[in-house]
Length: 609
Figure 1 (cartoon, helix red, strand yellow):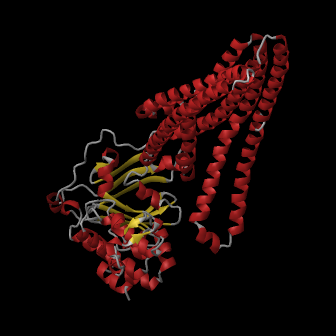
Figure 2 (cartoon, one colour; figure 1 turned 180 degrees about the vertical axis):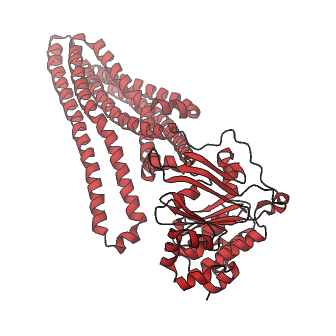
């Protein structure tokens, strides 16, 4: 918690001074109030002087109004400090999360990161607000009341010396047992967030398999587990107030008993006894509030440690010190002097600290303007392979080169502008079609947007929308079909003219005719030199469909992370049993043999029939 305060309180330190200072002035008036009441009783009530009572009453009203003014100023300072710091922490945390590679995102998990961005930071904000408003008030009020009471009478002060340690003992007993529970509560909230996110995002699948009751049981179990921890904390915390008030009331009884005796013998006045009772009450109430503050600060400390865990996690993929990479020129391409668009040399990758590689010794090379097809069974490593190209993950060993430069040497912004990727899951954000298409290039003209839509086979349905490019997009693109979302994400990747386009099974929701038309349009775009600098577009197609990859200049067949075959469609049919098996699972042998040697245009005509 202190670390967050040091780091994020820089612009808000004046609030941490002004707020407590105003609260101290309010406490000063609170400490004077019992003395004024004592005078009112001794001089006004005991002397039957209404004027004295009214005069002291007016003084109490003025003190209350002035104290309220200082309280409002303190509340304002607390709000500015807590909300300002909370916003700064949340922005820094969100910025750090966006710096993470997929490895760090896999480590923390999306539900946990969401909980840290929301619930954990809210706990820190609450602690800051209460710290400005209450942290000075209650300890100062407790000490001030105790000193004032002792100045009235030392004999009655012995009651303070007995009551305060008793309350402190109860406080220590409860807090020592509550702290571990607070960390458990945050972990249980992570679990609830995970189950909620899975259930709501996959609601169609849940209903399709009639698993509603199963999901309800999962959520109920997680909620009850969190509730059990919360109840355990509540039971422990519930001891504080009753025991504290019991000690306080017993102390008040003792003061009244002993004070009554001293009034009878003339050692104390009735007003002084009332003042002593008020100071006793203020002292013990202050201790109760301090105990509650410690509960809040303990929760905030647990949350702050979770926030710091993310802030301290250094991204495994950075581009510090990387100079802009030199791109090939059109002249280099014309004289075949340009480096390959994509090259992998013995690339290996494993998730986390796994001993077994997910990808093992992948070596391939794709020239500018060519198409690489990647095919293989489920879990063979296809998506992981293409994630290495824009450095979403880093290789464990080996190298990945784009345009002749190792991806580790590229500035990430430049690399991810040169490489356009369309992930398996089509993701759109709320806004408009235009705002989604302009992710890669915010200054892209309407002509560029329509060109990308034409290539992605999305122009027709966008033109039919009343608002065209300004048609609204709901969160996740829920107001579009699966195929429409995929085509819009492909168009988005084409805006800005990337040099290398990765289609990661991004046509799975398209019919064969549209898929073929899309691949033909992408080839045509490459021939026209529509990529940046007039260079041809290189394409990487990941697909389960043989029809999507068979026209590629190079096909990589993956099996359990290893390259099982590398070559053209005809070469692999003759040399790779796995590729032949995949082909025969989707095409009849006559179709397969007839397809060998067909040109892309001929294939398009055949698939369109």
